Image (cartoon, rainbow, N blue to C red; front, side, top):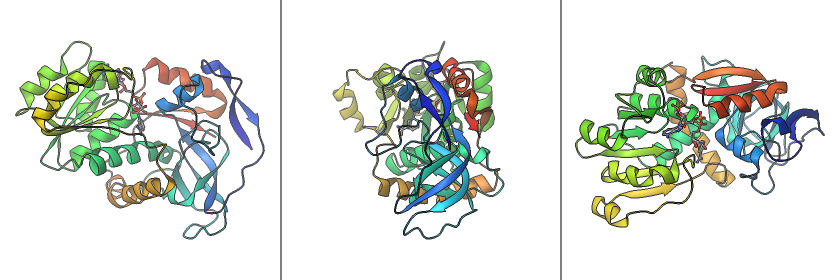
Length: 324
Ligand SMILES: NC(=O)c1ccc[n+]([C@@H]2O[C@H](COP(=O)([O-])OP(=O)(O)OC[C@H]3O[C@@H](n4cnc5c(N)ncnc54)[C@H](OP(=O)(O)O)[C@@H]3O)[C@@H](O)[C@H]2O)c1
């Protein structure tokens, strides 16, 4: 099989494609013949040496893919060789074949082609688990999505909008913000020349109920300031650093919550539960075309370094996919 290998840690140039030994399905695992793999910000960190795969996981980069079932491990029920699926992975997605616990396999939603399906697992599982399962966003509440034009952001806006929440979002250019408005964002904020706390103050009655944050340290104080009473701040990214001071007094007065999570490190059983919930609650909206995977473009696996450069440039809107 072919897989992306790294000559060390560093820039995109450390990545190339090579022949590697075939993967075999372990007990409870399924092997997929990969059609496409989604890029994630964490892949850039892993390439740089800052985000090692969890113990026992493939050291090939890649946290999501789509493909065709090629082999079943012992004890797998409910899947057959030849079926199409997409999968949430702990690693191994940048390859022609990957082994995945059966619970992290999801059917391809009706109306979505197999390559595009690779854009769904990370965004759907991250947004559903964090915004709805962890933060418990309700239809009458408001959600602030930071980075609304990114892979996660484009999906979060659509899902929250279609489930009845008021959506505010930040983005870096007027074009990206117009795109976010088209996805259902009610209020758009240019993070380069507007203060989101001020805009939230103007546009809401005392703050937002839930914030989905990709920035971490840089936005912590302002996120707490933008929260409503009993608001929930869910931090899923560290694009603005890892260390910041938290004003506990401000949080106490709001009876607020700050939660930080990562999907990749969760136990297999929890990931399977999240995938099951996504298939139950999110796939029907995708099948009806109400929530759409947003794909910026596809790049052949051999050009993986260019795909990483594109994500680093920030010029993309939505997901970047590697095709096999
Ligand atoms: N914890 C988890 O389980 C988990 C799972 C998946 C992803 N994530 C995290 O979620 C984040 C988004 O991932 P992704 O795949 O969607 O990446 P992506 O497509 O590259 O999106 C990155 C986003 O960051 C935005 N951004 C950059 N600077 C910003 C600023 N100062 N204020 C607000 N937004 C800013 C960009 O906005 P513009 O393009 O408009 O400049 C872009 O929308 C990443 O931090 C990733 O690590 C976490």
